[in-house]
Image (tube, rainbow, N blue to C red; front, side, top):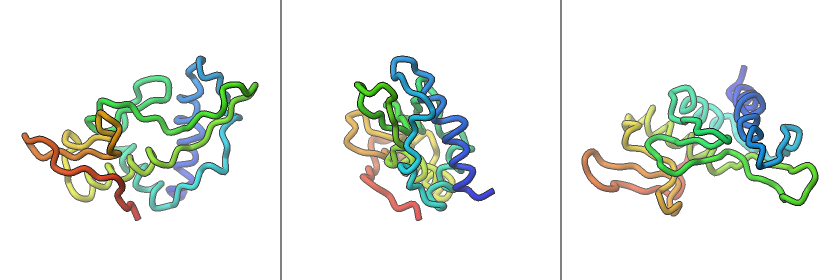
Length: 145
């Protein structure tokens, strides 16, 4: 099975059902817009490596903490609330963020205790801290290919 096939299975069997489980959203799995998934094979592979390492902790309602984050991420964007059947799309930014944090941790040996998705003010997608110091680096984006 390719990484992309495995990622798609994770979306359909775990991530989207977790997101839809929050009754206040009034979402059904059938509302997922399939064309919103533009994840590449490389990004799927990096995301899955991070996922399997346990860098994402489910907090309920389809929201996750990534690394040592205090701000929760979700992998989907909701459609209009007034629709009878609400649609939702895969949100690329958090997928790429998880993939990049996975690469920093697994390929470049950054300890997961010093990596986080989202700064507290949402200004940065990835936060990396130097040991026993303040912020070392902030990245608005990081190539995962």
